[in-house]
Length: 194
Image 1 (tube, rainbow, N blue to C red):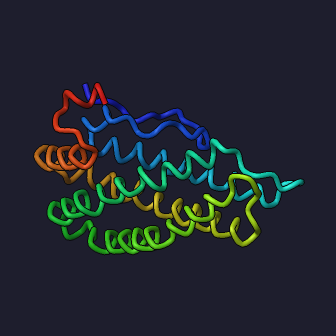
Image 2: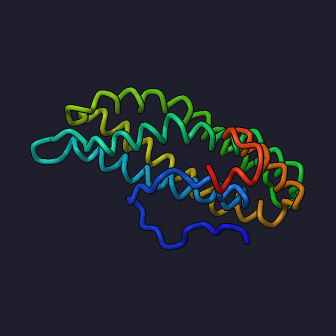
């Protein structure tokens, strides 16, 4: 039985990183990564709100730790999953009427901007262990989260449904293998122990 993506999560709960056992269903794993990213966006909004809070307290240390771990460790793996494996598979498998090339080009542009903006967001977050963000820093963090949310809408509404329709079993096997390798796993048996 294939693990299922969580259905009843509330945004802002900042759940732990995506469970490697979900790699048995690579598209489900990507969908769960998207949910995790939405939760991190809510967390980033909470951090940014510290600038406007009465007394302007420093963000919660656990929020900073979770955001930094996601941006530094999880996000690069997720972007590589899509850019190096999912998108090329979709270009090969999709029909002309899917117009997937245009969508992928838009998403790759978004990824480029995310990769360019992420180091600055990380730098700002690292300044906030003992102080609230300045207004300009809060705006940077908020813009970053907003951009990520718009990107996720397109991926969830267009990419994943078309991928589920067009990718064949051998495509999913290839995607799973590459995603596992990227995370240092060599077999499905390791997923339960990871």
